[in-house]
Image (cartoon, rainbow, N blue to C red; front, top):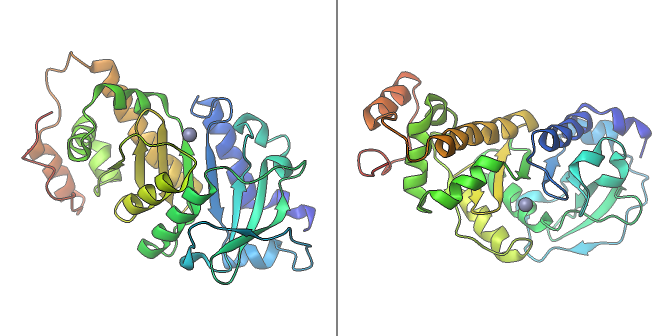
Length: 275
Ligand SMILES: [Zn+2]
C-alpha cells in the first residue's frame, strides 16, 4: 500500500473525526469506534493489489451486502486522541471476502493491533444500512455525555424518547423525522447487541445504547457526526431543564415544522404520548 493513503481525503476526514470526538469529550480513554466503507474510486486510487494480506478471519454473522467491500476501521483499544499521531497503528483497512463471510487486513493495525471489538456490530449495521441507502458509508460510535445522561432520567420507551427529542428543538424533527432506535441495556462487544442494533438500523440511522452511548450511520463522516451533535444538543437541553420545564414544542408545532419541510414524521409518536 502506498504511503499516499495517509493523504487520502477519506483518511484525513476519519482522523479529524476521531480528534474532534475526543476534544468534545465523547471519546474518553478507549471509547469510540468507527467504520468507513471506501468508494469505488477510493479503492482504485489507494488500494495496492500487490499488498500481502493477513490471514482470513471468519465473521460470526455473514454480511452478504458487503462482499468484496473495503472498510477503514479503528483499532481495538486505541484512544481516539492518539489516532492523529499514528494512523497506521490505530486504524486499519480490511477487505471482506466474496461471500461476505470473512475479512483480511490489508493495511494498518501495526504493532499487533486488531479491529475494534465492535467490528461485528459495525459490519452488521453497514450491511443493514446499505439495503436502505446504497450510499451509506459510515457507522460511528461514541459516548456523548448528555445523551447518556438522558438515558438515566427519561423513561426507556422508544416512542416516548423520540417524542421528547422532537419536542426539545426544532432541528430534531428535521434531522431525524424517522426517529431514533432505542435498545434495552445489553452487553456490548458480542453478537447479540450487534444483531439488535442492526435490526434497529433497518428503520433508523441513529441507535442509542442506554447508559453507554450512541451509534449513527451516514453517507459521510460529517453527516453521521451531525446526527450525533443534534441528538446531543437536545439531550443537553433536556438534562439542564429537567424538572423546570414550563413549555416545550407541542405536537401541533412539530407537525407544522415537518409539513413546512415536506417531511413525514414516524407514525404513532405525535398526539398520543405525554412529555
Ligand atoms: Zn462504547
